[in-house]
Amino acid sequence: MALYSAGVEYGIHCLAFLVGNYGDTREASVRDLAELQGVPLDYLAKIFTKLAKAKLVAATEGVRGGFKLARPADEITLLDIVNAIDGRKAIFECREIRGRCALFEGETPDWAVEGRCSIHAAMLTAQKRMEEALAQQTILDIARKVGRKAPAEFGEKLENWMNDRRERKGSGGAQTSDDQLIQVTEITN
Image (cartoon, rainbow, N blue to C red):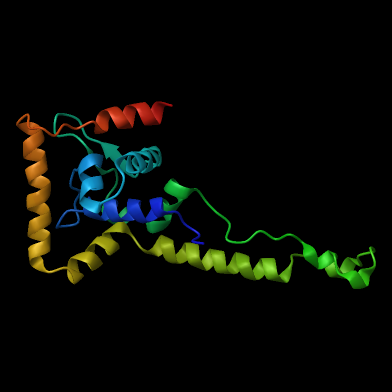
């Protein structure tokens, strides 16, 4: 079982797509991002509600509205995203079984439970290192890695795809943006 939800993966992927070619932010609707990523719209809307509450994304106004990064991409860490979507989670819950040894015959000696459990301490160290690693990676780092991996045509194709959807919204096409409605109704509840 994974420590982090699928929502964390969806959120990181979507925020990476909000990073423009030069590290700036681009706008996109939740609907477009859901379609682009092949993920459920309702689920992604809930993720963006959490990202907005954490001030990682901001709603944009107007017919072509959607969301953009609320801070520079190099200031949004993977740890920020994980905590916004899943909350801070402990990777281990110590149940203090060290004091239940049958050899103690119901009378646990002080030495057995003195100080922090060694297993718990090791797990806390592991969690700290994992969180430090996530805090060192920004959404800009991820977007750049994807950009280096993908062929140049992919970046052009992505820009054209996003622009096409924005133009359809602005010209009164069949697609409408309900991101402002999603953002307002979800966050105020």
